[in-house]
Length: 374
Image (cartoon, rainbow, N blue to C red; front, side, top):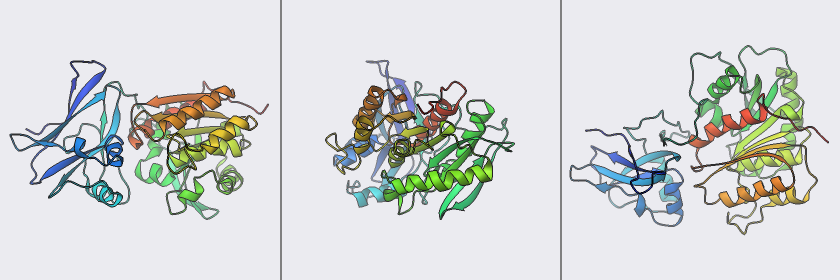
């Protein structure tokens, strides 16, 4: 019988669940389970053995994970012939190119880019709710158009019934992922319809090309381009606000680092920063606790900016968790308006898409207290 992931309560601790994934009906020599960030951690350690499924008496393959009841993760399965895949980067890229979603998954899948297969999503019962992620047919729809500004591709999402202004504005880095792949317009429309955010002009800036490492590394020229070219253009063309208190910049990973840097470097234009799994180890390439954490040090020693922050990081993100906690402690000590959250998941859009909605609602929503320049 085809079986979806089976979830049972851990008899030794009700705060955990036993999650069993099963693979049926394929002639293969083994199956590797890719549970986002969890499998990758062991790959970095050089051992994928804990994620190889076991062959059952009926010919199926299965594996059981013990996960806390609030865990959320995207996942895939990789049937293989011959030897199990290695842990080198080329080996891992081949796995990612061919891994597939679970044919028995329960939730809508997470789309992928670059020709890869979508991922299944596991959300255990106590994972944070994501009420704004899925498309709803009962809300007015905004519209998105693709444009080029200062040589940059920008997809602009306008709220339903857009007219006049000024409107709040959100700048989303890695916009080609959020727009073309993840359909973030549905999330924005849901937030607007429920009154969680005001009608907002959203600028989805494409940053995933070869220039990404340079753009998203505390680069003042890139942030100045956003502040001095993109935002004035959006004000003229779409009625986007020029008030930094109603302007959010959001990013993930290196984009999360850049969002926080934008609020540090140009608080006159970016009064709100939404950072998800920010790479605050930068610029030390070891991504270890001994890294320089340059931006955190700037916040610790520099003049306090008039900016607000929403920062979140996953408990499974072994390379980022400590550094995000350091930033939290510094921002708190310096008296910044900070909302900080740790979710039980990894470096994963399955988690980030819910966190993005929560962060926008916190920074732009009706209950906020915008910080004004002193």
